[in-house]
Image (cartoon, rainbow, N blue to C red; front, side, top):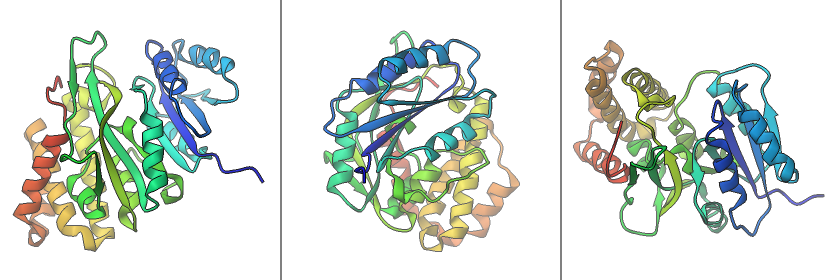
Length: 304
C-alpha cells in the first residue's frame, strides 16, 4: 500500500497567460521535505494559458496533473472539480495570478502536522499590482508568531486572509458538490464548525495580485455588491444551521451588511429583516472586536 500523499496544491485559472508561469514556478521552487502534487484546472482559457501550463508540466511530469476544460464551466464549478481531485492529506489553493513566497508550503504543513486539531491554516500576504507601483503588506493578527483561532472567532471575524493562503485538512471537507457561487469563508468555517480549530501564521508567504481593475469581485462596485450578497447568504445559512454560533455570526453579519451598504447605499429587505429579527444576538463587544480584527489583517494601503 502506497503511503498517503502529503499535499495537493490546487491551481485554478482562466485567461492568465501573463501570470500563470510565475505562479507555477513559485510552487515548484518551494523547498519541502514531503511529496506533493500540483493539480491545475484551466477553465477553457481562450488565450495561451493552457499552452504555458502544458509546457511547464511537460518538464515536471511527476508533479503535475492537468485538467484543461474543453468548455467554460465558470469559476465555481472549476474550483470544485479541481478540489474533488485532490489526493493529499492536506490541500492548498492558489489562483493562477498569485505567487507563493519561499517557505510557504513547508510552514503550513508543519502547522498542520504539529497540531492534529487544526483543520485550516492561513497567513499574511503582500498585495501588489502588475507593475509593482503598489505594494502593501497585510497586518499581523495580534502579536504571536502563530495564532490559534477558535470556531467562534472564525464565525465572528469572517474573512481574514487571501484565498491563496488557505491550506486545509482534506478529511475536514464536507461539501463536495456546490452549484452556487461562493466566497472562500464558506469552506473555512465549514472546516471548523463541527470541531477543530484554525491557525494564522504571522509571516508573509504570498504575493496577492490586486489590480485596480480586473476580473476579481472586489475590482468593481458591482462585483463587491455581488460578493457581499454571497457572503451575507452564507452567514444567514450558517446562522440557521449552527445556533451555538449565532452571537458570533450576528456580529459578522452586521459588519457584512454595513460594508454592503457603504458600497451601494442600499439596504435590502432581507438584510434589514435578519438584523431586526435576530437583534437579541447582538453583542457590542463582538461587533467591535470584529471591526478591529478585520482592520488589523487588511492591507495597510488599499487601491480598490
